[in-house]
Image 1 (cartoon, rainbow, N blue to C red):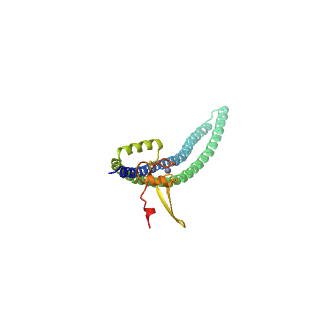
Image 2 (cartoon, protein in one colour; image 1 turned 120 degrees about the vertical axis):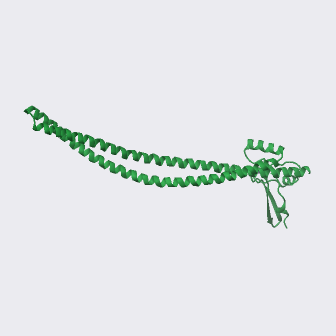
Length: 259
Ligand SMILES: [Zn+2]
């Protein structure tokens, strides 16, 4: 095997590895996005739950307040009855006057308590209506939420399967790429966080003057000078894109040798 075919093969093998890594990156980002969406849905459900809890509490509070008022009303009514019994048995005028005063006070308190009880009864109805409305909204959202979570879980499962396949393919391909290029690639990725090998794109345009061939970096799309391409295609040494400095992988010249 000659030096020339070695470089060409090394770059081609590395380019395959790089393509797998790009797919792994894409899948990993898609997986992260699913987690973000799941978290957003959880947060939304929490908000709906908080609203529902607040309405439940308002309704319970109204019921408790009404019960308390009813107890007070019963006590006032019993007190009034006691005063009335004692009034009929009053022994002197001063006791009679005092009891009459107490009866007046009790009657007034009972009147107030009755009005308050009616208000609280209305509050129970109002809070029940509000609770029912929020319950409907909550249940609708909860159904949507469950569907969203199911869908996200399905997508995650699918991506996990694809990632597993990609990782297996990567392991197999990593064994093929030679040690020197593996090192170059790892260092480049660590430093630049981008792909190392750029597969050059060839464009052929037919014009009046004949065929016009242009070459572009497959990654940054910068035009590659024709002279550089001629040298890169010999694979005697590595050539880099003048713009992004990725290693150029010259492709077969089919595009320009047709006809
Ligand atoms: Zn480039």
